[in-house]
Image (cartoon, rainbow, N blue to C red):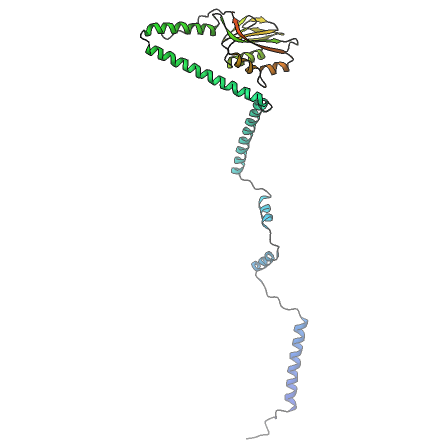
Length: 297
């Protein structure tokens, strides 16, 4: 074996190679420190996700506001909104009308409200009494031994009652006298008509105004500073003679917002007097109907 061809480990050439490798490694390390670090490439979707993650998270109130504004309406929502608006407007009008009709009662005193309730109770009682009277007549007809005679008696009584209502016969009984002084000429026909209607609702059975009998077909019209009742001109003072229960008639005229209060707002003076005997003697001619006939004929 030839030992002259082998180089010893500590030969100067080997040492130079090791030093060159070390210098090369040091140069590479220096370059890595000086150059910026490599950034790995990211997909487009990953970049967007990073931006979204970096954005601040919205609170619940902010998300609600973002969803409500700007508003987005569909055609169906607009139709529903219009329907709801119409319904709300109708309810508002109804409430306003009820408020106007109840405004007088809202400002009424406790004594006035008690009086109104008493009047309603009296009207209910009158209707109940009328019902009982009709039931009594039916029982008398059914139980009478001479039903024909009983029927004739009841017919005569009914004719008398209807004659009073129709104004063809005179009547007398307890009631009131109402006098309206109108020095300013501000009382109109509709005000007197309201008084008549209120008296009828309170149970008036016969009414006479300045010598003119008031019946179901009575009409009132303005005639300058006067009033025509069924074509008969009457002048102030207007004097109402009314037969009925005084305890019902007078309170009906004095309720809050009623006849007396309305006339006093027109600067008229109203006086109401109760009496045990009121005479209504103005008569109306019985009018024969042109077309209506009794069904029993």
